[in-house]
Length: 444
Image 1: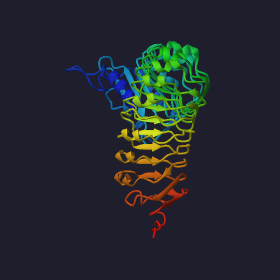
Image 2: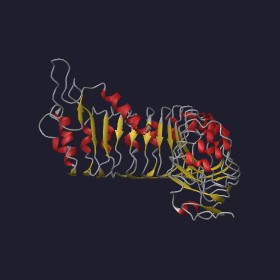
Image 3: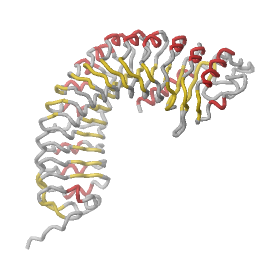
Image 4: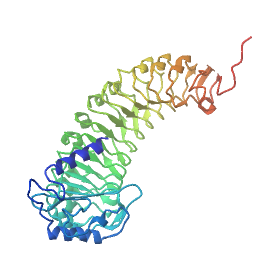
């Protein structure tokens, strides 16, 4: 949601300063597009061997501004092409390469070629001529080679960069640190390797940094928290980062989305994480974190998703200090002990709770029945004793539940949905009975 909103706002801001193709102000007609711009666009078209989107079939006639060329927008005063936006629909694509002629669109401010799937080749060096370019989105294609640092470093006006979802490989280019006006970098979903260059400390305007799903390594740089004061999204997930979370991260007052999942990051999660007051999503799953879960996390009033699964966390679940907007809580596959605190019922908006594969004991608190929003409940593979509270029948919205692999006994609540879940949801306990298991024995 944050990513889509950011793109929408930046595109709207760019186009607000220019009329759409073929429009003018008052009685003054819009100038036809410049021959050089038309030639550059036709050069791009020539580099596309297959177009099932139908976009390029509209590129006909002499006027690329007023002639209905789909995806092309011009400045109403000058007739120069300022935006080229080509986006695919599901099941449609373009095959070919990005022609070097694209560098001839020297007044271009936005270049978007998204989700075409089969546009390959390298990122053209002629893009360095686009010195007015503010937005460069070449994502969801099949571009190969390295990230062209020298080319990008010459785009002094560049603010938004995405080369996500391609086949780019090699290191992150240090030259990218010279583009100091960058507010967004998205290089996710490629095959990039190595560490984050120290030159990136110069990118003090960054609000969005996504390097997820690559093969990056090294530590999470300390300068991320010290230099990127406006950072709202940081996604380094699905890499091989190691070391500990730098303490500087806790100074990022605007950070809304933090994902470090699927790495090799170790150490404790310190209480200072509770200072991230803008945080709405925190994913630290599948790492090497140890120690207890900080209680301060549950004081974050905007936090709706918290995933701490697949770590080495110990200690008991903390008493819950309100929980604010929390909808998703996953602490599965750790070594958490203690018992489920009765204060968990304060998480009134919680929709998904997964405490499975831990060492939790004690009884299931009957106060949980007040969690009316709960849809997913997994308490399996622990050491929980006693009964499943009869008042759980109040949680009519639960669609999935598992109590498997505990030490529970007594009758399963005999009302929907709990008497309709498969028997496997209650297997490997001491003496649970009642639908969907065999009936309870009557005591004579």
